[in-house]
Image (cartoon, helix red, strand yellow):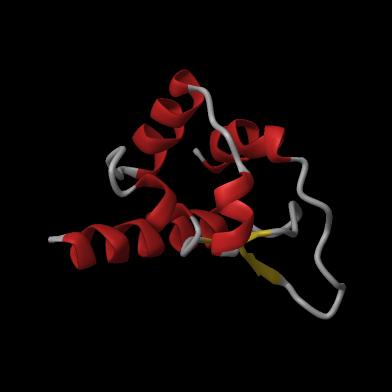
Length: 91
């Protein structure tokens, strides 16, 4: 679920975005600085249904809701929509 994704990404220690923004998109520059262990990478891949070769290119396009009080359904819809779009683009 979405909680697992937040947990898997918790090691990124991302600071909150400007309060004017409700959503955050990880930049390519930030992604290049992140080093994931194989285990964590595989866990996130499984949750997002994306493969290793497409991992960093997909993750930086996925918008994660930064408001933890938003509904789970809304969060899951964002996850599923973006993950599906990235898989479609690859195929």
